[in-house]
Amino acid sequence: MALLEVKRTPEGKILARRRDGRPLTLEDREEAKRLAGAAQEPPSENDPILPPEAWFPEFHRFHVQVVRETPNLDWGWLRDHRPDLFQSIRAKENELDGLEHARLSQVMAILREWRELVFKAQFEPTDAGKPQTGGTVN
Image (tube, rainbow, N blue to C red; front, side):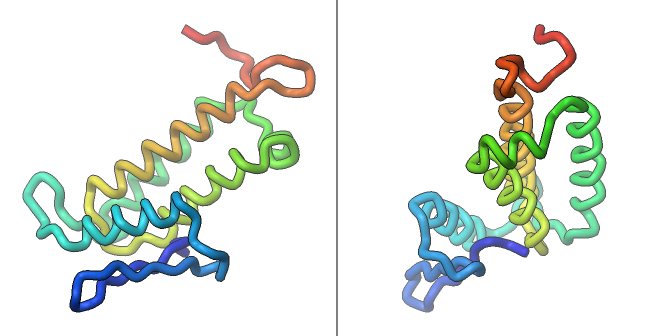
């Protein structure tokens, strides 16, 4: 389920609320503006509006690929020691889960942000002071 519900009034004002009932953060307000702006623009050939059936299988393949590339990421450690980063990753996943028909550019932006957060988490130092990766960094 998407974290934000965004609507535009007939006067063009943006109305947004969080589905969890919490107050809007600055990041929520920015995201609401971005979503409201994307909804206003007509679809183009280079940025079509896609149904979930068109983009979700790609997200699933991408998700599997990223998980395979980060085999030593300790989600429990991340949840306990970096709850902000853990929640940011989960928020992006929830945002994707809540999308219905969406612009290709919107889906790609969320996927890119999610991947960057996961890779950032991979290199968080653990209690032993080493990154959470067994591989080498080029």
